[in-house]
Length: 412
Image 1 (cartoon, rainbow, N blue to C red):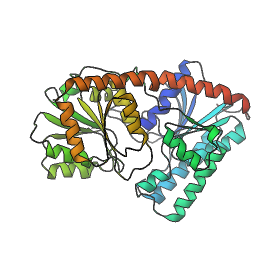
Image 2: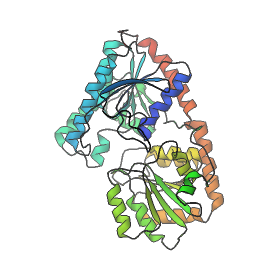
Image 3: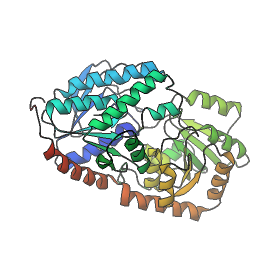
Image 4: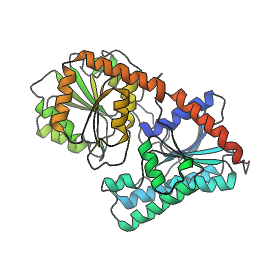
């Protein structure tokens, strides 16, 4: 159960898609409950538009889709409406799925945890909550959620869902500490790092179709690829680009879309940054070439992002074998991961001078870039691959399913 699923783009849509696809290949029957796509990749035909409900086979995964409200999600009240509309619609779709052994939910939105809990009581099966973002703390930190009544309401919901989930999976120790601190029993919270498809995301030539299409072949490419939202500190990248204008062969490539993009494009224009290029979000099939065409890839978060998040782009960069330069809270889990893997350079948030120094250091040291790239790839294959994650989930499913027998066997 996930709000996003392909052909939507982004890490949220592909995490469960990759897991589900591998489970199907291993002989499991997998259903997905999701919304109609809203973030179409380039070239998507839009066959879903105008549909309220549909069932399709998506790469072997039986996929049930429903259209939900799509208000402006940056407004807290409207975002809450969207979350509850998802929970309501997904509940009715869930009634049509028969005999679940496991109900696995991507959170946020946290409201889907309520849906999964009710369905597990009605139809049986263990309820596993996969916590990706620590809601509501993440939006409190961003200043998006300020209303004290809403904060108390969602914190109460958070505690309820954590108490009633059969098992909770988180992708880092810092996230585990938060979830336990909110009332989850320590013994039912498991750390399973987010996986990466190391067969799809793998090292490749710097000179490729993407680099040739956009004229990158003679440039030292410093890339940022992903959502341009409130959490991501792209301003520090623009400030670093401004200080590196004396190096015309260094190009800052920003690939993605989001609520902050228009402001960032204008800022780059105002600063007359000829060494910065913005491109729209690319299809999933092209994404590996974006990182392969890069010499260095960036992951930057604002200083007010205090939750111990591990941006998925870091895992992708590691798998593709490029060095990471990460600017974010150094007490979080992502800098610790980079240090363990020895795959990049970490900086405090909003450290323009540090970012400039890191880029120049890697610019002058090809051997170091290659070493960091090899280290990241090796670590991703050993600890973060899809096959490793699927084996872990299969073992957990085998442990939990006999303890939570199936209920209602009607459905598709």
